[in-house]
Amino acid sequence: ILYGRGIYRMGEVIDLGVKEGLIDKAGAWYSYNGDKIGQGKANAANFLEENPEMAQEIEAKIRDKYMPVVEQSDKEEGSELALEL
Image (cartoon, rainbow, N blue to C red; front, side):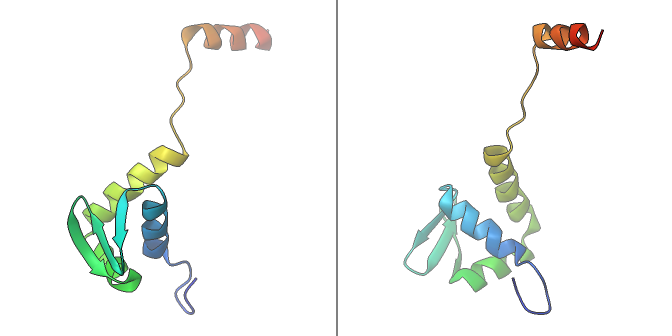
């Protein structure tokens, strides 16, 4: 949380990206897909703010990891209908 700004969204994207292995951290350097995105978390966060396409790509991968889409089969849908009757 940043004073006067609220939740540090790009900082969270970086932290979760590192945790899930999407963003590599070597010393103070952060890199994504082999491209260095910044030295230090603040610089990496600034890079992602300036490159929203990359930030959205990383965030989508994080969301897929933590909130996978579950599809129901036809059999499950039929049993739910039977329970409603």
